[in-house]
Image (tube, rainbow, N blue to C red; front, side, top):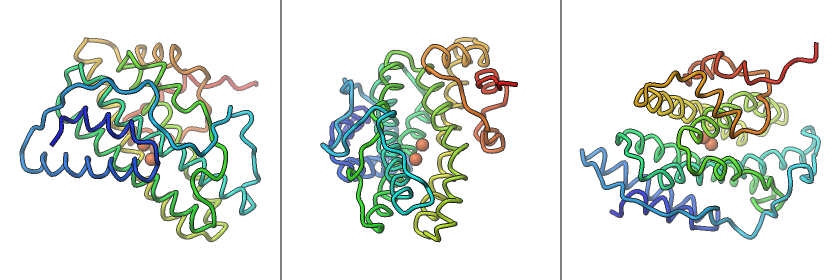
Length: 271
Ligand SMILES: [Fe+2]
Ligand SMILES: [Fe+2]
């Protein structure tokens, strides 16, 4: 088996979505098999690309130029599935990137176990969204997508605590806030396949947020830092807008994100 950082680099350099997730799942299975056999495989080092390889389609647009469609229409629901597929593909790269990019920072092996598992789940999520799109006569790449998704990774390319604060603990936590509303849209449309896929995503994303919180607190503890103000400072530094309520307080708590982490960063009500 190759060193893990090399495997991560391979995934990041694979452009096609289904090919990227296939190699991602294959490497994750190899890692898990070795770990289940009691081995501690080599992590190694890598020089991952600044931006991961991506397919020629979808066209990437500034979020303001991505057309909005009504969720009550079939086109609107395809647009939602397409946007989620794009988020999931980005998430595959983000989880392998946190392994490759910071491979020179010594971390316990459990850190790698967690992110390999998360990357494997994101790969499954992307495939599920592609299956739903295809069942609705569309496919990933058929619509334009959000261009800014890799921004958080670029901004935190030299700061592991910043990466943990912004990616799993802010962006993926935001997924916990918005997914129940999405599930409702597909329940109303009686799209059973999409409801089941989004239920899987919702259940598994809680763990990704919790891995973020776990390793953020680990690094704070290793450097004897107070986690709450450190989190606030990093999010203000790297995340360029305020956080949007309503928050899914229950799932955030389950994932180890207490209210005093996010409320002070929320937009002020206009009252
Ligand atoms: Fe996901
Ligand atoms: Fe995730």
